[in-house]
Image (cartoon, rainbow, N blue to C red; front, side, top):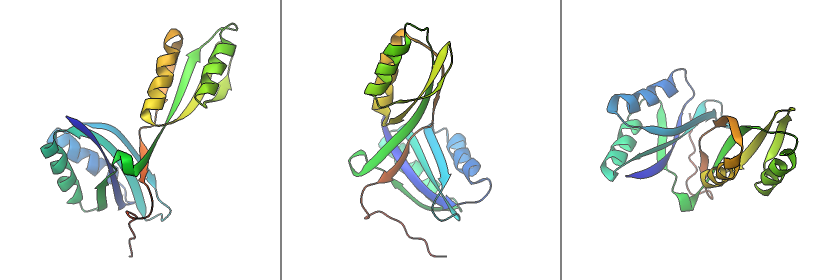
Length: 167
């Protein structure tokens, strides 16, 4: 089993995300992470999907997604040729004695404290998956009340793989 990150450029139409996720569901493929957002051109949406399987399954996924009507382009974002980022919001229970230590851990990872209450803090952290996983591991001694992760958003490095759609 290996993991691949696919980037799709699709028409910005209602139901497009549902049709893509439905293809995965019907075929029994797992989506580990999916993010979507409109591009600089509001006619198109960029979708980043993280999925896993053997080579044959991953090739099938790519071919079947490419056949969908709204899909304009699909390609793999290879780790050494791309930049991946993820956002996590972490709500941690703290008491007054723990406040300074949680701020120090957050600073090490360039996290931002975005909300403070007498019993908790919410930390925003952005980076690759391994950075966020390492941050969460350091919070092992604290009680994580809530955690929200966005999933990977990514772009290829340079201009070689930029897709221009004229319509």
